[in-house]
Length: 299
Image 1 (tube, one colour):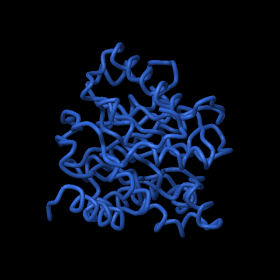
Image 2 (tube, rainbow, N blue to C red; image 1 turned 60 degrees about the vertical axis):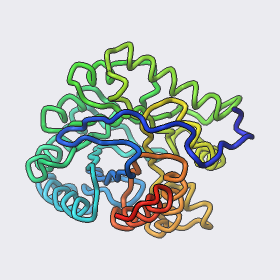
Image 3 (cartoon, rainbow, N blue to C red; image 1 turned 45 degrees about the vertical axis):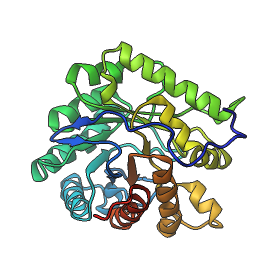
């Protein structure tokens, strides 16, 4: 399918088999799950980096992160996703040691405070991922999931945890955009399975905002249902992204909630299984209504 031929919104295939993520079994197709974002950074694009809000004090950042995670779970989050390196355009690189120092204490404290809630670690560094798993994380979320290095997949296989494979590129250069996104994800899935990750432990993310122009990001939203052909749960992370701000006339991150809710509703209609968001309460409510319309069931 070319990028000029948008897929229908209705997902063409049935739901993938369930996935065990830490203490919870996620039964895809029953409802939409919500992943709340906890950024332990000084420079998050969305303005919610906890190291910035507490002036870099690590102890205070851990306390703030746990409080944020608690609030998100109270608002309906099913997973808490902890990240320690900004992925905004032009961000500075963070060493393994620095990223681990940011992430691991937060993962450990969040797991201790919320033992029944799966904690995900958002990292592309296997050493950081392994340390986070030791601290209580039960899901790996790799923004470079389509890179040829299979170290993260081998770690997921060895530890028996699910892995999110996100699409990304260094530059937004494509001959046939959607065809290449699908091919990259298929190749990444093949590498992960070859590394020993069970198919039921693999989740795909089209990478809204990563290695793509704003026009590409809009195509991602139109083509989402096509990801069902891969046979895996789909995660969508469009929350507060710059493409939303551009569509809304240049609105800053804190004013992009309504645009994010539009992507949530369209994503759910296309068959997305997990939405990764900053504003949990509003997105949970949008998901409840979208699920009720699409599945014909009141909660």
